[in-house]
Length: 288
Image (cartoon, rainbow, N blue to C red; front, side, top):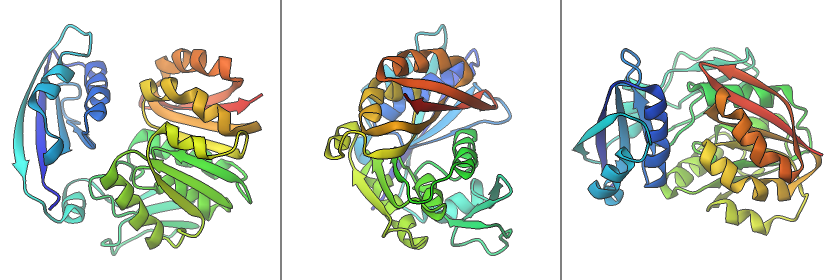
């Protein structure tokens, strides 16, 4: 049974930066999905964690880890396993068109716009439907790349949306890495739904799983995670990227770019440019 805890956090005074740092900390202790209050950004956050992973002491520690002058309180509600697709349809997930070329929808949607690339995502509790700025920015950059016959890694694949789009764009071999077991199973389902499971190899693990790939064997590397994980693992990303290869990074704000670039430079990665939406950014790098 996919039982969860819904944990609602209140942040005083309201701070979007504190909310983002809290999300990072919660992700490290097993939280899978986050929903912010659009009417009062930075004041409340709702997060979901598998019931077996709920640890009140760890959550309290995460609340105190932002390093900002805010007070964060939380209350939890047990949510019995249910039809998560129905919940997404009812509350969050509606069809979306990205870059005028790609439509993302779920198998339960009936009124779907037409586009060149039609992606079916049943997200359940995994991240990545195209609605968040980071996912749509990454997808738009994928649409701009020549991926025909390319080898690619999608690090932190979530629902698998970026790997699916890359496969539809002609990538020949894709390794899709996901650390969370439930998200991994969801991604595998979505790969089958879109008929790309013959191109995409899903891997359950973290950056250490890249050790199985040969040095310089990947043409394009994608990572839409968060700043701390990216900067901590970027040397492993760079090792498998071929000379002249492209790396797309997201999951952090525009003001975080210098931090990411400082970690990337010693790995032979140079900045080609970046895109921004709602302060979130997609950073494009090249392996020198």
